[in-house]
Length: 147
Image (cartoon, rainbow, N blue to C red; front, side):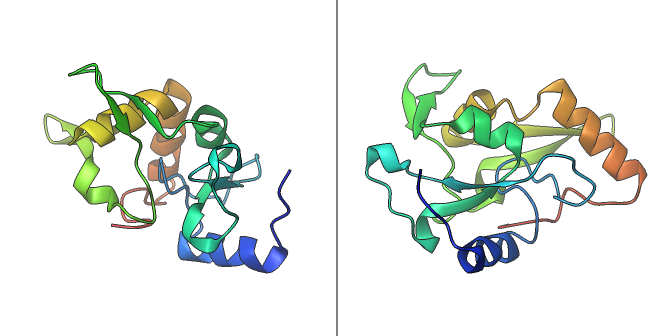
């Protein structure tokens, strides 16, 4: 296991505005400790440097695991997953609305977005429920992180 210093962990957390860089859930009021994800896993040659680290909730971190690519549901082609250091979240994802109402679900705007949603299960019912509860508490999930 790669050791990440407290200073590096704090820098990654601060850069992510204390929110998961994949699903946008904030770390406050969460029970599980957020992880520092190697965007390119160490097992695939990824370094433990700031440019290869992302702040991830336990759900996203568990599902990303060692994946760097995943099939796009529309084409079946394997595409690279969302890379928080290179990609802009808003270029690949959008918050969904139904009849003008915020659904707390994430839509994929690109093959990368769709593949990331599928791989990380970003619209898992538990995540959507958490987003709904946070929204009721007035805690925004929309404006966090790399836009």
